[in-house]
Image (cartoon, rainbow, N blue to C red; front, side, top):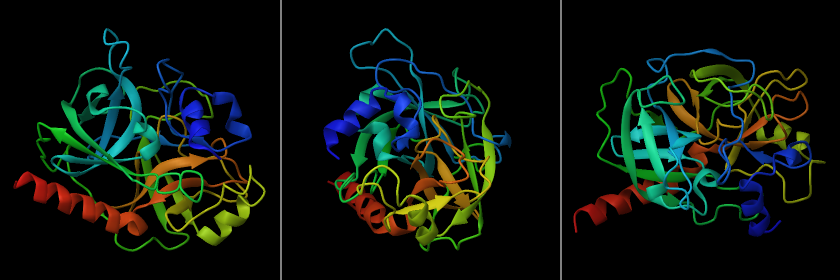
Length: 285
């Protein structure tokens, strides 16, 4: 699977969702595609997910266009956001705004800040599709953390146990290619072991699609009906108030046969910590 295929996918091949793993982002490329909400979820409030942000994007060749919701993300410090690598690949920082403290996918409610720097995992998409699907965004000015509607979340250092209930939030779709919801939604989904998840994806696509240690899974195996979906990419998977996952990819959305797949924060923690340390060193120069 080449990187060229990924770039092609990012620019709008919605119809391949049932045959190939789709990154769960909304505004793919220059066109504004239908978005929506989490599958099988409930109306939430930013005070219940104060780490959640909306990552707004516009095409570099269309400066006259407004910024539109593209992906989610999580606040980990006043000037740092964690999101998915597939949300920001082949773009530049000036194409983004971060909106925090808002329940809404559109409008300027909440606090708006600029993306100053993008740091994407250098081994993204190596060894497996969507492997190491993580990125950091440096924002400026810093977010005004208030511990109510804008709050940093703690990063996990150990992976969650299978069966633990996770909370996923965002502005994704009710189904693959579904309709829009402007309001922040959330859903509670059990963690699936990597062994079971890898077995579920064994005959999916080609050999490049498999579950690595840099991924974790969540879903109701054999039942389905709840999941993250397009527009939720980059957003948080939280267990016991710690960020354990970043919404990444899956076979369509909410299928009984295939759990959703997330970047595994605990596994990727050394990379995150190393990049944060580098930023601190550079800031002192």
